Length: 83
Picture (cartoon, one colour):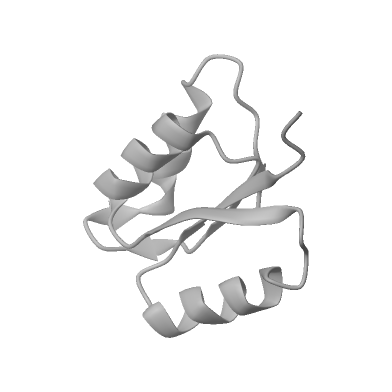
């Protein structure tokens, strides 16, 4: 049984992405499934990976977090924690 939990960072600042990832590295069961810097990438990755935890910035390249969140709510049986 896989005990790893996945998280996704949706943020257009590489510095912020690195900072979140560095802090998450202290939790051995949590693994990054990816970073997304653009709205369309965030939609694609969230659908493909279905991470249990999502860190998301409001302003993103190509739009806003609202578009990503609207997309996530339409994925059947998927209810991640969102920060």
